Length: 162
Image (cartoon, rainbow, N blue to C red; front, side, top):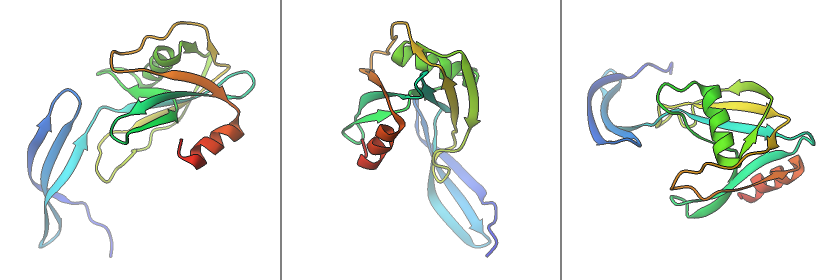
């Protein structure tokens, strides 16, 4: 069956604040087939950076993630501010979380992280020759440590779910 664009028959906010908007939409999937409610999450776009040092090691940040109740090693990144360009946001997040800067930046991709439920994109960048020269500037909600890892170790963290 050929996929069709859904029709929005109605929309109401379930939650709307500075963090996100959760909508309950009434959708017609194809003639005579209505899905009500269909929940949609609107959040700001995010940025993630694969930051490599001169030894081609990957800079990762470790922090506690409350929803999953886990400590994770992950790529530096975060939400874009309103009106902020993706590259500027990636550079800001890398600097805030790790104190690092890089002279060479390259855009990689901007996929939808979960197009089944979320409207946002994650803008991904590669930062090369990354150096950690400055202080971090963490938000009050952040407690972050960082470290460089050889690529095989990063593969191991991914495999282990760390």
